[in-house]
Image (cartoon, rainbow, N blue to C red; front, top):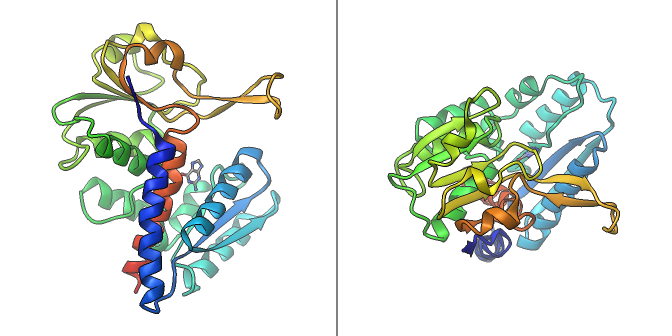
Length: 291
Ligand code: GUN
């Protein structure tokens, strides 16, 4: 079994980005600037956004965190987005999801200038991605492709089963894995809550990408020997033995499934760090594109 080490791979990518930033500085160019909008004070979102800001510092980017109260109206959030769209100093920005219930998430994402949409969530970028045109690829799927590519995991002609059809991970992943090109050319089955006999399908999979948010959902009895496992889950499970009172669990029962796997991502230290690295990569691309 080979561990798909997202922490190490993300650090390699961050080092590559740092080299590009240093070259930009040497040429007297402006360094990339990422902004993140956080509405409310959800614990997990605060952690993720904090990691994104720290990652910017690590590679030499400028970063701005826009923190808005939970009670922010949709109108005020849309105004903030218009401000970021117009601000020439900001190369790319993200709106951390989920948003409070009184705000229409899709309306907000539609308001982001597609050229600054480094999360790749705007319909224009999503459509361009599906058509294999140049676009911003959502950071988590992009990170998974990079992991598979850099570990030379064969995807061509393989059967990939994606579990979960979220707009952020499952749906784009299913599109990308079937595309022509590196980490593509796979035969993809996209499964979800209405899928019948899921185990029968997952047992036929060469590669399984799980993005459900249900801790330790995928068990050893659901996979065949030699399977490649990508675990996107990251749930906080109460655990009094941990200093913070919770443990981080993926969607895969790692101890038992890893014994049958050829490659597997750990949680934490798998897909999570890759997501952040690819967000930085998209911001670098935005900077170069907007020059
Ligand atoms: N919430 C969970 N994942 C993501 C992500 O990739 N981007 C944003 N903006 N919010 C998220």
